[in-house]
Length: 98
Image (cartoon, rainbow, N blue to C red; front, side, top):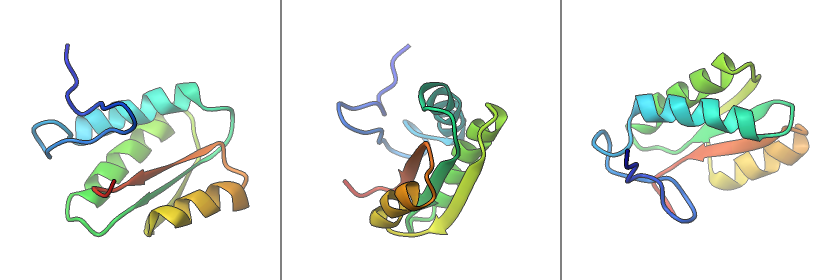
């Protein structure tokens, strides 16, 4: 199986051909298995597809037993800040920016 959305330093691809809600959910499950115990901060940018991808990612995290701290529409720096401020195990920003 090839996963063209997986790059060297990020996960990105054309929605829905390379990156879709099913893949986002599976990424959430996998991330939950890799992080230290604790909650996970998630946020998204203004793109029309971002909220659905974030919801799917959060569903995967929750399905794997993680508490999701959904900060909604935000900038990448806000996710970074909240991970530290809220003492979360990690964070994910759903964005098309690099």
